[in-house]
Image (tube, rainbow, N blue to C red; front, top):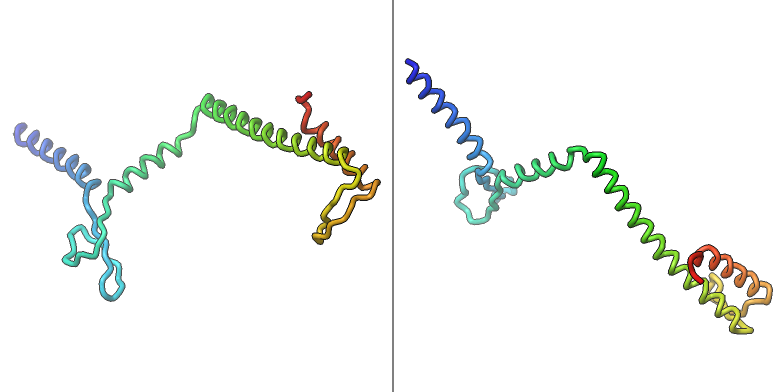
Length: 152
């Protein structure tokens, strides 16, 4: 009787484990018939116009989803935060460098010419008045002080 029970348990375990392995590798066929009805089947259709899907893709996606959903450790969070901070600071420095160069060029241009042409929002060009030129020069100096802090 013991041999019979152990054989039954072994057979039952083999069936259970083999179906779980087989189930994830089953091919599923998808096709659209002449009435535009979408069909899914485990049996390959007679018509040649079908696509083959597998459950492996879904299984792998779930595994990735599980990995994503697990909460990172404090060290991983801190490392990610430090990396993001470094990226933001590098980007801010790059923007500040561009703004610094633009402000320096504006100041040089405003100091180099007696008459400076300006395009207003309507697209009309006109010369800046002495007062407008001074205001723009003051603004350029302010921008230089803001963006060129570490420059000599």
